[in-house]
Structure formats: C-alpha cells, structure tokens
Image (cartoon, rainbow over the protein chains, first blue to last red):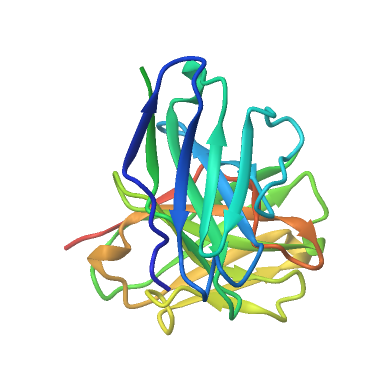
Length: 110
Length: 122
C-alpha cells in the first residue's frame, strides 16, 4: 500500500488548462478502473470531483475531467478559475478491500 | 440532507486507546459501506479503514492493521473506530466518509464529516 505519486504542485493562469498526474502500479491504478479525485480547500473536508476514472458527480463542473492510461491516471481542469485553487488528491482501489491515496497536489491559480 | 458527525477525538498518551464514533443521518445508513480517512496536520489524506453495509467485508491500511478495528451499528446509524496501541504518527484529523454506491460498495467517498482530531502525545 504505497501512496500514489502526484506532483507536489501545479499552477496555471485563469482560463488555461492544467493536468495533474497520478502514478500508481499494476496493483492499484493499473488493475482497476476505481480511480477517483478529490478537491480540498483549506480547512474544509474533501469533495469528490471524479469517480470511476472519468465520471463526474452531479453538481461538479464539466471543466473537470479524468482519464487513465496504464498505471497513470490524470485530472484535467479546463478554463481555470480562481475558486479551483485547492489541493487535489487521487485515490485508487488497491485490492483486498483497501484503498490508497496520492500524496496530493497543490493547485495555484496565478 | 446527508450528515456525518464524528466524535471521540482528543489528546491521548502513546500506547493508550481511543474510540471514535460517527453518527450518520439523511440517508439509509445500512445500505452503504462506510470508511475512515485521516489527515495528519499539514499532510495528505490517508485511507484508514472501510466496512461494507453488512460488515461482511472489512479492510485496513497496513499502517493500522492489528491495532485499529472498524465496526458499525446499523440500528444506531453509527460507525466506529476502535484505536489501540496509539502512536505519535496516528495524530491526525479523522474523517468519516460515506461510500457512493449502495450495497455493492465502490471505494468512492461522496460525503464526508468535518472530522475529529486525535492527538497522540505524552
């Protein structure tokens, strides 16, 4: 159960697109389409943004999209807005009723 | 409205025990798997444990296996985490989280509580 690997930080200007990668192994991301992404603003509980690799819960902007290739999942945010500035975490099922999170990525909107 | 309210956190000495509770409302509790996720101060999220709707399937992170026990009481709409042999590295905000899908379980967390802080220190 090693944490998934995410870049520590990414940044972009309003209106631009950014992509956050999430690299796991053949035991987690590579074996299951059970990947999700969470947004967390300071002092707040996390919010589910993407599940099942690319599905968006009701109420989540279509500016957020997810994908996966091999052992790496990605979250893309298009049309960056100031309110997107937050920490983002990927998460994957890892077998044997266990889950593993990524280390988190701090998104800065310049 | 879905509500998850954690309680039971506090300051505890290393090696001692603590029991966390999560009171759920606003949904059919016994239809959903539930999870505990923690976040150490200034650090990232770490899944701790999960339990299926009927307690038939339970999982733990390696870091807590053998020390923590998850359980639920569907009659009381409550989730619990018994934490034994606590260590300094268990210091964190502990969140209770609801699974997205009913019955089948999905390991996606669509509702979270506000967390209860556990501090392990002498």
